[in-house]
Length: 379
Ligand SMILES: Nc1ccn([C@@H]2O[C@H](COP(=O)(O)OP(=O)(O)OP(=O)(O)O)[C@@H](O)[C@H]2O)c(=O)n1
Ligand SMILES: C[C@](O)(CO)[C@H](O)COP(=O)(O)O
Image 1 (cartoon, rainbow, N blue to C red):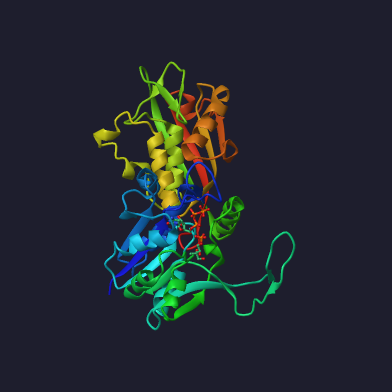
Image 2: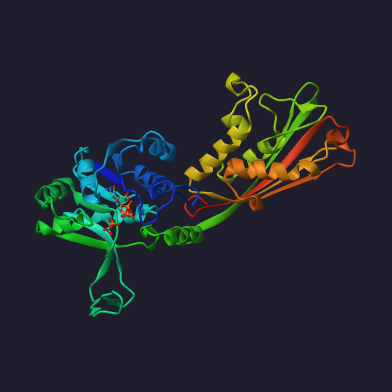
């Protein structure tokens, strides 16, 4: 049996505002859409994931998740879902809001299990507050017994949800698909909802989602170390900044010893080997490459595993040049490459008291420690 997933991401996010629609804004270190796309596309039972986007949103989609199957949505969520349903070929379908980024495989499993006995299923949470009609002054209390908060993904037998959309009057809106299936007289099962799935609707929801997500992460640290030999006639690059000096460092790339150490530290946090495995010195395409690319790659791999960087600490070992005058610009540069605040980056330097290869001025070394947080399953 084929199972497809639709992520509706064609909204404008007007209640949140901002320079990009919320589904492409960053939350927990990645574009919001990327979180649920990863959760759905990595689930072993799901064969096909289709993203429904708005007109002109292709570049944002590609920037968020790379190449992905997608279709254009409509003016309302209901129309966007209908366009997505027309694009799939599967017996079962999960319909999910991009605005609910933190989707676990446990919720998907529960929904698919409920579909064995029901034509639809959705995650629901109990209501804890008193409910009342509102306006300028308090209206009457709404009984909350048996009232639930309805989340997504909503899972359906595809034929049923297609029939529900076909039967729904074109001049009436529906805020979700389950109410349309119910209007057909079919039963939709409830499975336990997840507070992590809360929809990001208003500006304050971003910070709340970040905080809830961060609380689920586990801290991990890893270190990186690198050495490069001095050579005359080379530029000296440190932390992505060109430093005036009479010698530079030799290497296949720009030989930025500080960025290499940080790259290895980040790769270490996810057990992804070392920089040489990802960018072999034997590969001509990396000749003279800016090491910022290597660091960005390591940060992307970490983000793909749901990790976020808490802190980077790098120590540069050399007799000369003096690092102090360049410390702030190196910090700023590393922070900019990684999308961090400057306060999340520390740059230190030391001589080795004229001892060893650094003491003799033959080369430079750098060591870095990365502190990150990763989802419990990875950590
Ligand atoms: N025409 C639309 C409207 C909404 N959505 C999607 O439906 C989900 C839930 O909608 P909502 O949170 O209301 O998002 P927006 O419509 O973008 O927000 P707003 O109402 O504030 O503009 C979101 O993932 C949104 O991208 C959609 O695909 N097509
Ligand atoms: C589908 C939904 O997320 C279920 O709670 C909700 O109805 C979407 O409503 P919105 O007004 O489109 O945000």
